[in-house]
Image 1 (cartoon, rainbow, N blue to C red):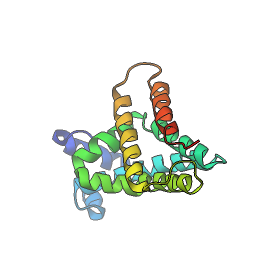
Image 2 (image 1 turned 180 degrees about the horizontal axis):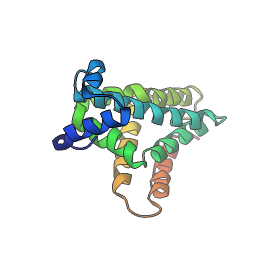
Image 3 (image 1 turned 180 degrees about the vertical axis):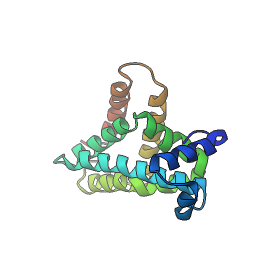
Image 4 (image 1 turned 30 degrees about the vertical axis):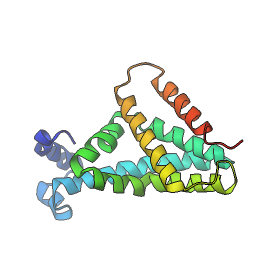
Length: 172
């Protein structure tokens, strides 16, 4: 999408790629922010689908949580995902609206996984909502950091740190 100063240029690129006129685009969306919101929702949905697919491929509740978290970090290393989902999203839509979309796209899956882990005793009984927000925030911040990390092992090192953090939640 580009920065605010090049938003008109970004809109031109969108309509060219879609093969429509700006008028046709505005028939469906009432502003550039609405166009961006639709793009962001699509990117978030694609990342959430990758996370769910990775989690559902695992047998146990702990393996599902860790596979989902790792899939999120991996998906978030794609430059276009980082730019749209983590940089431009909060800047264009504002923090509150971005957070609501993030919650709808992936935080729900994280909360469900944590609820299962509390239910089966893998992690201590506790309110799930604050834990889900803490972990979601940590993973979003890790994804932003990965956008600037240049080392060849940055993703593996980040995953190792997150895995240690998650392991600290286990009761046994």
